Each structure stands twice: as C-alpha cells, then as structure tokens.
Image (cartoon, rainbow, N blue to C red; front, side, top):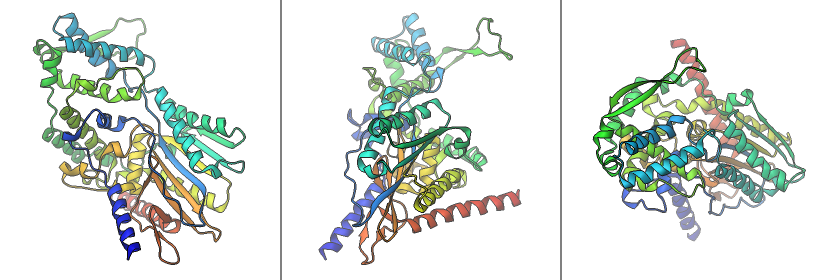
Length: 465
C-alpha cells in the first residue's frame, strides 16, 4: 500500500514537471525578470538531482542537440534604431533625465556590439563549457579512454564557437579522448534544414492568427514614451530616416535616405525590449530591466511566446504539421542510436544548431507536453512557456543505458532536467515502474511510426497537388 501511494505521488510529480505554467504578471520580481526575455533567457546551471537508473543498467551512449549559447543581437537596426531615436531626442532637448540614462546604456551596448552581430558572447562560451563539463561528470564512463565523441555544427559562426567551447572542456579534461568534429552544409541538411512545411508556416491562417493575438494583447507604449520624452509628439510624429540602397552597390557613393513622418512609439518600445531581453547575454555591468514595468515585461513576453508557438508547434493554424519539418533530425537521432547500440564505438553524439530547429524538434518528440495543440490561443501559455523550453544554450540529451542481458532503456533531459514523453515508463520483469526511463524499443517504434506517417502524408499531398 505504501509503495502504491509513493508511486502515485511520483507520477503526479512527473505530470506537474511536464506541464510548464507561466509565472503570473503579479509574481514577476527582480529574481525572475530575466525569464521574460523569452528565448533570450540566459542558460543557468541546473540544480536538480538526477534519478538513478534501475539496478544493473549502465550508461553507454549519449545523443545531444544544443542551441548555441548567449549571443549578440543579429541585425544592425536592432541597436541603431533605438539609439538614433533617443539621440535625435537628446539633440533636440526633449529627452528626460531618465531618457538620458537609457540613451547612455543603449549607446554603450551598441558600441560593444560593433562588429559582433550574432556572435557568441563570453557567457555563451561558458554555458557550453559548463554543459559539457557536467556531461562528463554525470557520465564519466562515456568519456573514458574507450570513448569516442562525434560533434557537428551548422556553419553559423556562433554555433561553431559553441561546439568548440564544449569540446575545449573535453580536450582539457580528457586530452587523449578520440574526438571528431565537423561543420558543413552536409551536416546542416539535418541540423537546421526544415523540409516540407514552408507553405504551412506562411499560410494566411497563421498570419491572421498572429494579427488577432497581437490585437487582443496589445502593447501600450504610452507610459514609457512619457518617461523618455518631455514632449511625446517628438516620437508620435517622428521623422523616420530609411537608407536607400542602390543596386548594384556603389562603394564611394554618399549614403542616401528617404524620410517619412510616423508614430515610432511601438518601434522604439519593441526595440528597447529586444535590447533589454538580450542584456542578460552579457557581463557588461548594467542592464535595461528598469525600462519596463513588470506588466509591460509580461505583455512583451506573451508576444514572444505566441510567436514561437505559431512557428514551431503543432498549431491548427499551420495544419498541425510544422514539427515534422525536422523529421530528418529525428531520423538521424534514431539511426545514430541504432549504430551505437550495434557497437560502432561512438559513445557521445553532439549536435549544435539553433532555436528554430530545437523548438519544433522538441514538439516532434513530444517532450514535456510541448506537442500540445490548442484552438484557443489565449490558453497557449497554459502549457507552452518558451523560457522553460528553449532559451540561450538550451539542449536535449538522450542518455542510453544497457544491462548485461542487452536490454536498452533511455532517459530524456531537457536543459539537463529530467523530461517526459507520451509513453509509459519502463517496467522491470516484476512490474516495478521507473519514472523518467523508457524502453528503447518502444521509444524507437513510437518515433519511427511518426516518420512513417509523415512520409505517407507527403506522398498523399503530392498526389493531391
């Protein structure tokens, strides 16, 4: 009776873990504000103890996909546009004292980012060193003299540096370990290529759904504009300059601009949110957290959260198929696992890529309920909370165990925390259940069936077209 009660409590705990819930706006504070940077949330070291495997099972293989670590923003306008508006206001004498402090911080951030767009930051490097170091601590037998590591990355600079940051820890701690690594378009074919779903992601239904959500959950830049500007008509009737780009380019020609009068409040507001959310990627000694109220952080996050759901998840607005665009990555995981089980000598497969792959891939796998599909988009955050799914440095690890009889079981880790999928936990011959561990034969059959379904779906669609 006691055992049954204990197991029931364990299963309830697992169910609670698998269903992320957004922190209510009323509970945001200085200790959790960084989470509301959404996919830019900084990767933090995990602090939970891993559940030991059933008796007699030992790890023999680890399969991984990780997003690059913390980085600079990707495009020049993300820095220049907020700076230009604030600097124009300063030059015209309409910037408040608070606005001047914001301008100073934006200018320092823009100068720091010069020549580094999209680059991995020092924090990003340290994140991947830590992730790899903990892999070696948790599974030392996979990195011993008999181990073999195969790492590959997309051709993105920040992804390659993320991979090399992780490998530097292996070289430091195990200099004689056999390691191969690669970054090529061949690897990118499954690490970052989305196939067969572009028409769904660009559908009018998806675009209309996004529009309706944003209209129903609008941002309100008025308070911030009043805090930044002595005269808000400066920004509501802002003369926006846009550079005219000629083709072919003329290297020595002077820069030309077009000018239009527009309300730049939302442009500035959203630009400052991107900067503020990204500040946690740096050790620069200051942040922009005070620019927004907690309610404003919450609203901007819900936009970020909805966006990732709409382009990554099993959403009815995109035909409930978008995650299948990364079936090649799933096939690679399955094939590599089969080869490792058969004895090809590889003990660790490391893959490095992007959030645009990891988000839908986790949905395809059904990790922690993120395959959830919902028609009422006001309820997305009931289960889909992107700071608990993919942020800077986020990673999936599948750890394989085997006993002397050759039985193989597997555990899933999302961001180094134990995760669940929609399959019953492994049971031994006596019927005892082991949370977080799954029979590999059942897992592989479950995922191979998904790949088969997708292949048939595409064939039938091609016939219909």
